[in-house]
Structures are given as C-alpha cells and as structure tokens.
Image (cartoon, rainbow, N blue to C red; front, side, top):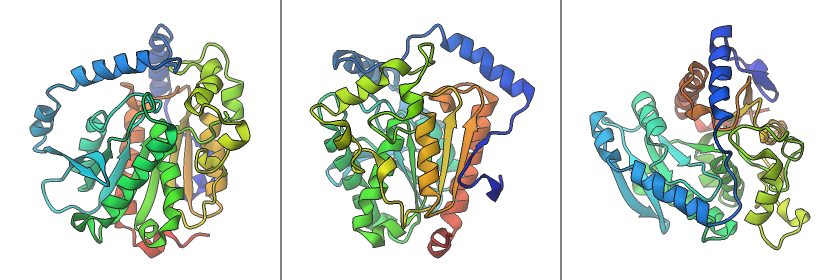
Length: 329
C-alpha cells in the first residue's frame, strides 16, 4: 500500500470473487444472534464455553514448534509465545470480546502467524473482564502489563508494536495515551495496529444511527450497552480521554494501521480516530467493503489478505528505527 492512504479511509482492494465470498458469508451471519451486553450471566456462560473450546490449545502450538508461557507481569496475567530463534521485537496483544468475554489465548491463531512470520515475541494481556471489574480496572491492568513488558530485562532494547481488536483496540489506544506519562517507554512503541475499535464510549454517529439489521453486533443497542459499561457517568464524563481515546492528545504517538468494516456500526470510531491521530503520526486506514464487525475471524480471502498485510506492516515497524517512527509530519 502507498502513502496515499495515510489519514483517510481507503477502500481495501478486492476482486469481484472476493467480494462475492464476503457477501455470501454475510448471509450466514444474518441467521446468527448478534452480540449484546445486557447482563452478566450471558457473558459468563460464553466465557465458560470459550475455555472449553480452548482445551488442547497448547498441543496445537507444539504442532508449529512453539509453546506458550503463562506468567504474571505487573500483577497481570499474560500469555507469551516466543519464536524459535532470536526475537526481533515484541507484539503486545489486547484481545477483543466486548470487555466482558475473551482471554489471552483466544488470539493464538493470529499470534502464531505473527510469531512465525515476523520473528517476534507475542505477549497477550489477560486483563480483567467488566463482568466483575469496572472499566477503569481493565484500563489499569493493560497499562500495568504494558509498563512491565517495557521494563522487563528479556525485552530491553526490543521495539514493540501494540495490537488491539474491537474492545482490545479501545484498551490499546487508551494504554498508549496513558503511557505518555512515561515518554521513554512510549518511545519504545514503534506502531499501533487497531482493528475496528471502540473509541468513543458515548457512541459515534454510525453507532447511534445503526440500522436494526446490523450483523454480529446489536447496533441499535450499543449506546445502552456502553452506558451499562460505565454506570453512573454522564456522557460528558464518558468522553474523558481516559475512557474515550478519540478525545485524547495523540502527540508523540507512533504510526498506526487501522481497519474497519463498511457494515460495522463502529466504522466511524476508526475513521474519526484516524483523522485525529494523523496530525501527529502517519496513519494508514482502510475500510473493508461489505464487511461487518469481527471480519478478520471469518473464512474469507479478504480477511486473509488483511492479516497478511498486517504482518508485513508489523515487520516494517519492528525494523524501523525509533527516530524514523516519530519523524512525521
């Protein structure tokens, strides 16, 4: 991709066959229930099912000649997957799941590909979930884990790229803004890769105006879900940058690569974040045609091309000198 895509949402290149495949998969998604945050019982049930489905996950890693280490960094559990040879850098992964489900293991498939292709160590943060912890606790977990990784002797001198998906995109962006308190640490971050994140906890226009037939996410109910996530707060308080990264100060932040789906109620979150971020650093931002929220998990050629490009971008950021990553505008 070229510099022409910096700062504005460019359509992702695709052929008619790839687009038809996405649309055919969307018809299947239309039959499935949409993800909703309405109570604490349903997320706990989904989380239990997720853990059952992950049984045997370490065996799958061994098939790739890899293994995972679970440890605590900054009083926060993390899952570490290292390359077979020397590590060129670190990818700090914040998983998705609407802040209420998910864990550090759920991105193993993506992270294995990153480890093997980019020759980096992936540290996935197992932050607390909002079913039992206020959103401020999740943000604190992510910041503490990030500072611990940046301070750890194993990773000293290694460049770091932050990756976040959906709710993880929110946590990744908020963590980078909070890290501005420690400029030397922030300088170690060479890039931010953000997939369809949530950056305004009051709801951007595309969230507030989402049609009733949205896929994957319950578009019409998202504003209320965001309020449930932040009980007792006014919209003005929800727009504080510590909670809504969209309103933060992006000076000194690293280059970013962002993706959003054309059919995702959250598409304006990515578009608006890119517009603000680009004043301080290069931003590549792409809109995936006919794609809903969560598209990188779907078995389509378009998703695979996005993931392959993401890995190329990670490698480029890891290999770029820190001074170069901050040489914009």
